[in-house]
Image (cartoon, rainbow, N blue to C red; front, side, top):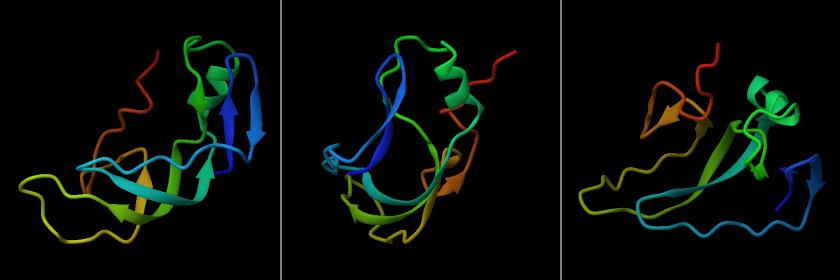
Length: 100
């Protein structure tokens, strides 16, 4: 998998990241387009010094795998976008906390 990965000191382009496994009640999304937002820029400046991971959480993608949990609808999503896309509806982003 390709991604921009923050290793704690710098953002690095990588092509060797493992594709995540789709756990029960979740979806696997193939990212078609990702964007870098102010949170990502702040991480590069030291905001959230404990963060290690993939940057660019604002995205548009295609659901490639979906596992149902008990009581879930079998209706399938074909497109998804984040970070404000939650449980099939647009909602407040939890990925970008409000900062003053």
